[in-house]
Amino acid sequence: MSSHRTAWSFYGRRSELAQLRAILDRRRWFFLQISGRRRIGKTTLIQHVLNAEERARTLYIQIPDSDPVGVIAACNGYLETFGMAERVSDLADLARLIGRLAEAGRIIAIDEFQYFHRKQLGDFCSFLQAEVDRLSARSGEVKGGLIALGSLHTEMAALLEDRSAPLFNRTTDRLELGHLDFGSILEILRTHADDDPRRLLFLWNLFEGVPKFYRDAYEQGVLAANRRQLLGRLFFASSSPLRGEADNWFLRELRGRYDMVLQHLARNPGCTNADIVAAIAQVSRADEVKQVGGYLKILSERYRMIERKLPIFAPEKARSGRYYIRDNFLRAWLSALQRPVAATAFRPMDEMIAQADERLATVEGFGLEAMAGQLYEERSRLGLGDFPLSERISGYWDRGNVEIDLVALDEKNRRIRFGTCRRDPDRLPASLHGLHLGAKAFLNAHGRFQKWTKEFVAIAPTIPANLRAKLTAAGVLAEDILDLTQGI
Image (spheres, rainbow, N blue to C red):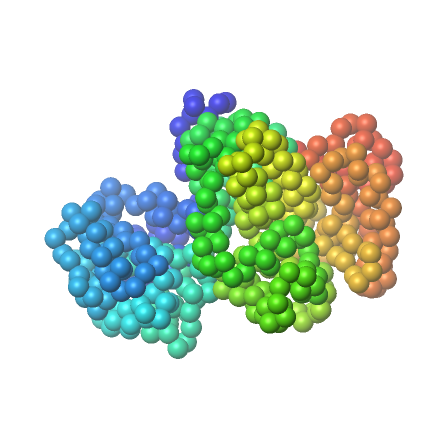
């Protein structure tokens, strides 16, 4: 069904909606923390759950990354927009206003709350603490509440969860908003396009589970279009809605200091610390090379842009960790889209779109591995399929050339499944030799699985019948995306 025939709806988030509805239905003071990456749908979730009466008494304020004067000016602008006569003159005044409005039964939603972690705005949390404590003491009488929304996890945690913070232990509820699950993504595609496996991989590799990006594709009329039409409309045209997305909502937070690390990780997923140091050393001063460890720590812990993965069963302090960019959109932008989009000022657009599409096809190879792992986990949670997981799906590697794309454990039935993933299904047969060698190395390293039932699986977006038969004859289970999404 084409996107212009069916109106966009609200997809997924059933458990989050139920949790938020339960908070509102208590009809008493609440202080709710909602965290999640930018564009993940925090504000939309609130809008969707509020009934007409609740929306009428809600004040929304988005805090700018500014000094106190800029924050106060922005707050007064929102007060005017919402038709309220009140105005504030400083941060203490803002905290007192929040208290008065909550007492009067209003819901106050403060977006980008993490900016109050900035040193020049830090006093606000102490002022707000006094109001929150006063309201909490009368929680049964107060019918309003405060919702703090934030997109930088570490700074939100520092404001609301750190024992030394003024607002520590003051929230009544917390909600961490993650990506849409595959069931919700498939609902979007089945409603507005189709669930062709290659379309699902292409879009998931770009957008993962960020509802805003699927909505952008729907609004531009390209959710059901071919790859290059979608890329051209969403990224390459002068009015493209996602042309500046990464720079505006990810990279601007870094102010350019960590660009080399991110660029290298985008093009070389699975780098070790030594790989990154060697790459930076080729283009940087010695003092900058010494800071690589600090860069990795901040990108991982503060911004949650990257993650360090360990081979299955490795101890937390193992030196064999590998670094990856966490966010599909950021990885796709840095590795495939950023430079071709910038080059359209000097090169033909069609040529740059084709170049970006070719680079994305390479990125999708890694994306398929991550996608297959998540589908295994989601199927297990839903009770689907023939492999209930007892251990998270994970990859395995050692210091040699041994690498396995997927390792899954079924403890109850003493089964272990080793998997190989290829975007091009014709490459699956050639990968089986390495898969068996990897499995042998794994079993030698983890002898407790020697007596378990060993299974092998080959995964691709689509697997034609003749190749499926060939894999089956080799004792390997063939699974494509249609198999893995069946029943979801």
